[in-house]
Length: 395
Ligand code: FEO
Image (cartoon, rainbow, N blue to C red; front, side, top):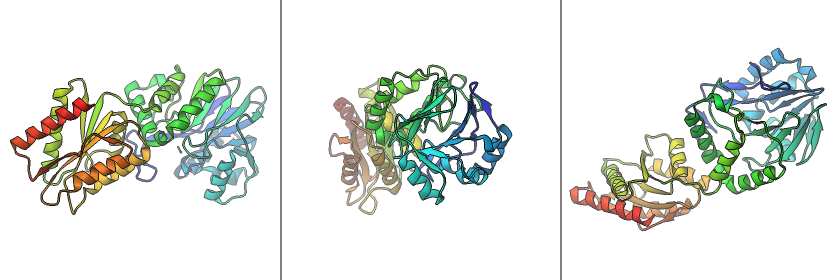
């Protein structure tokens, strides 16, 4: 399938309606995704990025319906993770000598993945490739989110091909940002930022500053996942500036795991206390064993503080809590307060270990946490409410 975007640019990607997980099992993708590839046809023709390997034959067949493959003069690889470079081997079997433009790191990664000696042309920031009336301008964007990443800007049509940057795992036939549900779009764009780009926030801030300083006219931002930013494309750039700056809303997220519901009851009572003391604060609860991990990490990204609760089990805390906190640690969220809580029967060190782990995740624990022996009775539940009130007061 192909879709004309402008006089010279055609979308030739793949919408993946069925995708439920990404990066192995690391992320959930509840609204599918797409792998966007773009064909730029001027006096010369360039193909920007390909699609994920399971769709390589479909991609090549569909491309053949749009263009005689031998008329592709250049392949531009903005980023070479498998979801964008996976169809390269199938494409290169058809047009083996076509030059592949990428960064030096990009060449290293393509060689590392596919062990092929293709015709690589490495580029740096500011290098230009003339297509006739228009030019492609390359802008390196290392660690947004891999070391090989670059953006490509098309002069004349004023399009920024930003690869993963500004993308969303969001399958849609609508193609453009103004044609989709805005709440869904921003939910997915934020989820993408929180779970993929957040560890590199300082680089995001700097790269956006550098690009804005170039004062390039901008008609479209074409990412490699999800919809294209056509209506006020700078809105997503402004959102990224906000998200990269230790983003937080007036929200407290409580995550917990539970064996016999004692820690769940503590979580709920703490939530009541917070809500009582700070009625304007959004308080959300998630069970780390049963709720969606990507939703949880995104809600933590939005929060000014988190509470993590687990019963003490075998001198530690429950393994799904450990998994979520390990994910969160890698995302390097900044300036968030925290505390731990949990029920116990005898040894009771789970709360202390959770407090240490929260510190390890970069959060600032506000105290030593709250413990409750066995099942909380009314008195203990009131102590949890009071703990919630005091926690809210410290924020
Ligand atoms: Fe969409 Fe980093 O690959």
